[in-house]
Length: 501
Ligand SMILES: *[C@@H]1O[C@H](CO)[C@@H](O)[C@H](O)[C@H]1NC(C)=O
Ligand SMILES: *[C@@H]1O[C@H](CO)[C@@H](O)[C@H](O)[C@H]1NC(C)=O
Ligand SMILES: *[C@@H]1O[C@H](CO)[C@@H](O)[C@H](O)[C@H]1NC(C)=O
Ligand SMILES: *[C@@H]1O[C@H](CO)[C@@H](O)[C@H](O)[C@H]1NC(C)=O
Image 1 (spheres, rainbow, N blue to C red):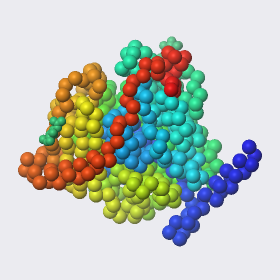
Image 2: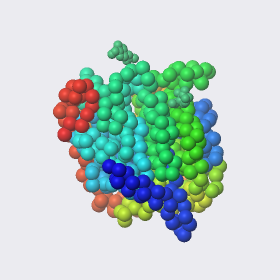
Image 3: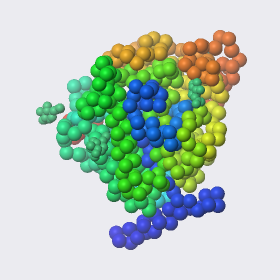
Image 4: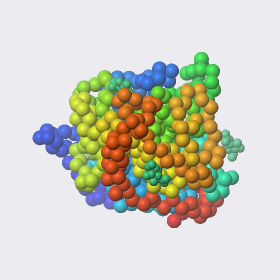
């Protein structure tokens, strides 16, 4: 035990110093905050009605990104971030991992924290995992995190920390809050996000600053649900619509959480060495009051509103600061770029992620010229989209949760005060309607809101992009195991959602 500690300490101390382009540099601390379902129009720098003063200030002293792209829903975005690959290469392309689902992020992929640990980072996950838990091997402590405090599934209620399974046993409710592998004592009085922030602050306060820290704070907000402590609602006394008021209150809570993390980093003397990254995992969803305006549609689609999200970075690497960078970047790039900031060249030669450190540091143009939004071969929603330069092609079904509906109320430009739609019979596996099959071509430079389909005018352009997409299609792998297994029933585990295989 003792010798293991000495070895770990020595490796850690050596790891702090490395040679990068001939310079001795210290590996930075990296704090990555991934918001849940935060829409384009739900952050202060895009919408002054939303109060996020701390995030705004960080952005003003860092770089705000105008074209950060993620996947249409949570699980695929998280998979792409953890692996550096497009989800169609990892089997994660279809959608979220539902409770009771057997599959998880395939074990053959090395994750971001696993790579960071190799050079001495101490790695922590606080908040949402959502990359599978049917087997213990799929869970955070087996995927590179030294510690985990949070929920394994897609969401929990903020007070009860419970979730419902919606497919197998509608009435069944299970608990989902863990501290490492142990179940946290049930308590329905403390708001989940306050617990999460407290833990993240605690990790920072106890961290030994000479070791590089990787803190992945997968905050469970603003997400779904409308419960929020009244203190945050009080920030919006003039907002009459209760749903919007509560939704914005949740975003302001995220802002306060970020403030608390930055204060903790300052108190610990770590702030000057910290790269803080803030990104949303997908656009606002139909079940929330969030908004992606001026972009089209909601999360779970292939339209811009689903995948173009608020993002910013702050820290010592940023030399040119206080502006909005219009360069393209994709969630896989953040995998590669975080590694690059840590002085790591990935062993895989075929990662989709690109290194955008130079763009971040010096404001230079993005190296990225194209990306694949998704390629999904699920039988009810075979949708795909690609961007090449300013051009975007959508083919097949653009909305994985509404296979039969196109250009309906869910795929348009929804006003901020739209009616929140409760999910009822809309979930992909239950809808029997045949999938839509569209061909849409947009020029995103002239038409970022996707209002003018040019596919009929420019058939050659359509063919050019379709051929590119077909090249990528050759690499599509089968989906992970999406079987829903009744053995996952939390009733078999004292009412707690738990690994069951
Ligand atoms: C909290 O749990 C208690 C005891 O199980 C229950 O009576 C109460 O209704 C719960 N409160 C909330 C807000 O869920
Ligand atoms: C931030 O810290 C303050 C002071 O400790 C605390 O009252 C507040 O609840 C914290 N906010 C969050 C979002 O955790
Ligand atoms: C951000 O993108 C929008 C829409 O594409 C564009 O109109 C705007 O000029 C861009 N902002 C910056 C600072 O490049
Ligand atoms: C969808 O439309 C394209 C182009 O019109 C066609 O080639 C393809 O076979 C159609 N797919 C299905 C599943 O109908």
